[in-house]
Image (cartoon, rainbow, N blue to C red; front, top):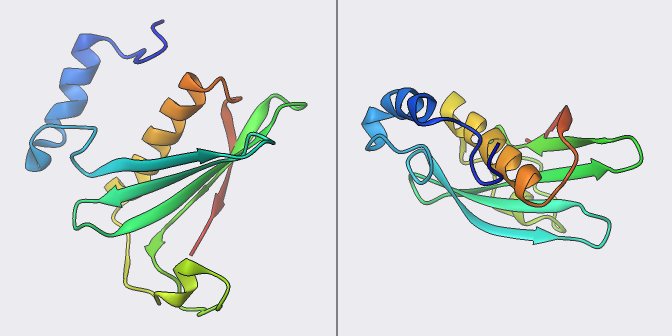
Amino acid sequence: SRKTQPLGKDALERLSSLYEEYGGKLEGGVAKLSHVSRANDGTTKMLIELKDGLEVETVIIPWFDKGWSTICISSQVGCKQGCTFCNTGRMGRLRNLSANEILSQFFYALKICRLASIPELANVGKFS
């Protein structure tokens, strides 16, 4: 399979038809990847911009010795805890994410794992 996109043309067309309200685009329709950073240990943080301009963070934590990775996904924009050390906590909880917005985090994480040779996702954690 190609490193950049293992889905065939027919599969991409069928998936894109599910997102007609977003202009038929998988990438950049529901959400877009706005920033990626990677630590020395391979932990990868992605900032995902949602259609309304708000952003959420998704983190991939690789366990190279075990051959798999954990993904921490966001289910809300912001957090109600209000921790002063956390940017997300300082903004307060703004809204819940839609199922499409949550799934878009997996879509981008899978793509980053393929492109950066990060072990496949096997566990899911959840941010607020």
